[in-house]
Every structure is written in structure tokens, then in C-alpha cells.
Image (cartoon, rainbow, N blue to C red; front, side, top):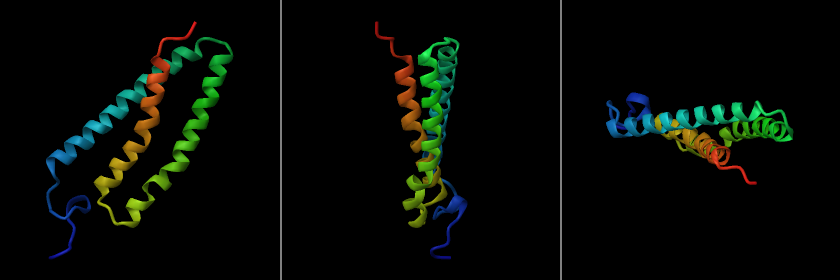
Length: 112
């Protein structure tokens, strides 16, 4: 039927293999960056100083803000009737930016 959506809301019954591959790669990169941030923060928390306390507060604030803003980031796509793959891609991109920035910041050489 015309206008009927198939697999995951896409127009065809079969998914685009490249779109799935790209989504999987983006998800894997988010996982890898998040794992690195967890490891780097764990190392930072083992140093009982004011910097570790600031990092813990920053982590909690960033997580609360990122989760609160996720809905707003996806709202236009949801109202536009975007395919679920597009909505998932927006969610991954929403979290990937701050996670990547934290990985870069935490892995940078400390200033002396």
C-alpha cells in the first residue's frame, strides 16, 4: 500500500544496510568513548583531593542535564514523523558530543 511504512518505520520493508551499519558504528563509538570516560574518571576518583570532588559534581550535573535535554533534542524529529532509526541516531548523537568532549578533557595531559 502507498504510504505504508515497513521495518522500523522506514518506507521499504527492508532496512538500508548502510544506515544500519552507520548506526551500529556510531553506537559502538559512543560505547567506547563512554567506557574510556568511566575508566578515566575512576582513576581521577582514586585521588582524594578537591579535583576529584569537582569531577564527581560535574559528572552528576552533566548526566542530569543530558538526560533532561534528550527529549528536547528529539522532539522535532518525533513531531515530523521521523523513522525510528533517525530518532535513535539523534539520541546517539545527543550523548556522543558531551561524552567525546569528556574523553578528550580527561585524557589531556594535566597542566603543571
